[in-house]
Image 1 (cartoon, one colour):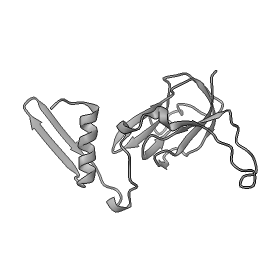
Image 2 (cartoon, helix red, strand yellow):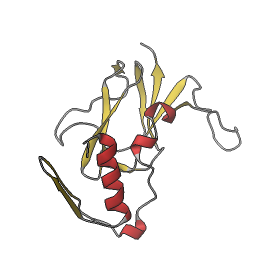
Image 3 (tube, helix red, strand yellow):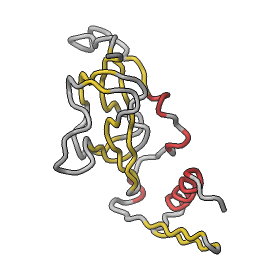
Image 4 (cartoon, helix red, strand yellow):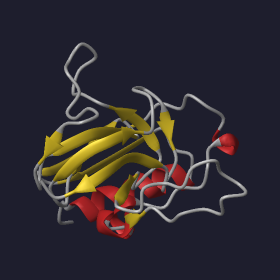
Length: 158
């Protein structure tokens, strides 16, 4: 067995589907021991698309103006939404007392870390695919986010 991110993702998917809390594999010099804690009833967790099947660049879309009758102001069409690629817990920094990776009005460059989403005890860094400026942070630190939920609205470019 070759140890790749896809292999680990497949094992995590099997654990979730079979409602396993631990999985141990021992093949000579390769030993894998996975464990997960279950905090909520498995029947109440939302259906999740594995992150490896959804490239992040497919989750960045221009904001589309809504009908004026349903909203007082029309969103700025020059803003781009950055959406969550997975279900998990949103963190603005790498530790509880740390400064946020980005905040409103702050510029960032391509490849900069914008936030972390914790899923199945794994910390997944969400990185910028282009440079820009944060115009709005749409979720609270420590909030559970859904797949496709808007995390930031940004103005692309420097």
